[in-house]
View (cartoon, rainbow, N blue to C red):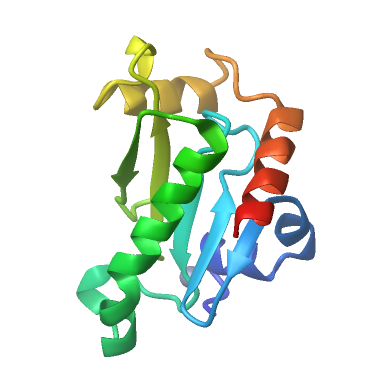
Length: 147
Ligand SMILES: [Zn+2]
């Protein structure tokens, strides 16, 4: 836990946990993107430990990362019915691993490849509609049932 880290604070915050957290193990935490969410079913896979990313993994994290990514990616597909799942991690907003797992629908040209980054910024900037908070809650409840 690092006091200044936004991800560490989210992991501790009871309201955020109640609203968005889907599952938590010793090493990994799966949650929905908080509102305003760029898409319903946009999940995040976080390391529980404050860690910048795979380059800083401890051996147990390195050993279980592949399965954690696969499970969380399959969960995105299960709850959304999407065609594919993008996995993106920059770690600039917070130097704490949070892998974005993004539902990709073949029929949605606005979220193809790097356009999904433009979509993300447009939603965060208020130029494009976010996912309805009720849709987000439905996704969270569905994902909890599958987890
Ligand atoms: Zn942190």
